[in-house]
Length: 305
Image (tube, rainbow, N blue to C red; front, side):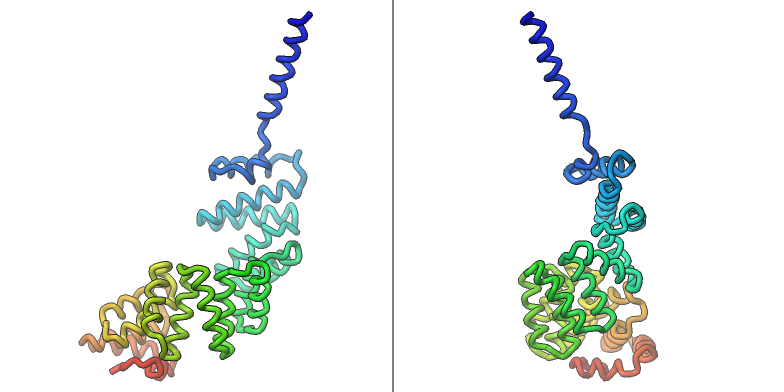
């Protein structure tokens, strides 16, 4: 009798252990550390109709974010869209899709998604991205309000501080912009946007040029494709007579934005000052884009001839 009871106990324990070992893809989608295993769990959860619609949508949004982080933009965008077909109010999917569209310059498509994301689940990121849209549209007061909201949710957000600094700079609040750039650099010294913004602020006011040069170098190191950083460094190199270095900086900017008039004119100056008279072709092409580009370089303290 005792053996029979003991056997039943062993069987029950084994059954409990097997039940505990049964995979829960929805939970693993959020908790696993290995990326491939996590994506597999998200896929299983998304395809399992035994889960509720909001759980399946959440799994798709999580899989999308993993793909977005890996630079797999198109698959990520498809996953975000699939998540929204299941649950049109999924905040992570709205935020992710809006983020990708904003990064590709599709402001009109990104804006409504981010407004919906903020309504579904207010966050620092949704306010930050809406601030970036307002900034790009030239709606500077709105941008400041959006960045303020982002900072209320995340006090030391370097991106929000840098964005607010840029908006204040455009409105002529140079002291406010300087304070925000300083705070952004303290929060994240490797943020190219903040370093480049402060470089231009110092350059345009002809103050603290050693710091401006340090900011430009740090910004380019952090993000070689940051056009503002390459341009600010190029102008400072022209002022210091570093013709070859300046040309390299402007070439780097033109690799990202081929028609940038500041980069074209700056490269032309660097070429001419180093003895290459064909640099005038760059300068003339820049004037076709911006008839006042020469005056802008004069204002920045660059001797163009």
